[in-house]
Image (tube, rainbow, N blue to C red):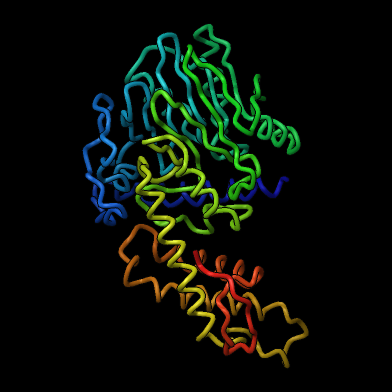
Length: 372
């Protein structure tokens, strides 16, 4: 389980190093990628709530130029983002409910909250056990302690069990709720978790919902207004990625906090589903034209066969990227994310024979399973 922590830390460093490196030129606006869902862009506001079709404008540049981004989503909920890491909080009558105090942002989160209320954080939710999304918890707990508040820390029982199993040093949950359709009350407001039976990102990943606000929070499944992140955002079981998206769409929400990317909507889920369908088609086409052995060393000159399949899948991912370029090449992250995600898709299709029946140039005959 230590490997999981290290992997998420590396993902965190990738986000942060990119942004810190760019801060030297933070006064220069970089051209933004177009919206994947034809969003209406509006300037950030901590006072005016968003309409369902609206997103925050210049989000990439804001992450480079501003200490943080703060946007009111609904009457009581707010979207926060700093250095490409985001979360949300709910302002009640007596205190603040904070989801996921993301890494290296504790003081910034407290400052953002102070823009809209003088109330302390009284409750924290851990959405899942990855440290990059919850490791500022000690900062929040200490600040509330100074205000005379003992913070409730709530997670699903699955997350609490995983934190215990990896011997996490972060503050332990003080309360747990069932991973499968659990709920708790915050100042009379019902908060729910919809745990996936088969989760892609981590085994303890679920959708957190505030039904009264029609808001959902689920980090690392969907980066709204962007293509899927490199490696499907570190999904531990990417086989279930599409299934989780469909389940997310079926739930009752309007606004999405996804941990990264912009404020989300169901249009963003539809975009992801369309992209995944096109990705599978592109990978299937690529299997038909890329020959086995491309890019691999001559097997007569090495004492290991291990290079053959990785080189083949890499070539498939690169070819699929070219098939997808005309439709998706202008979107955020295309050059970085699509080749790797194509490679992962190729591996899944290879492993599960997820390709329409055809005789490939590799000489391998795959069984029929359609792409829908």
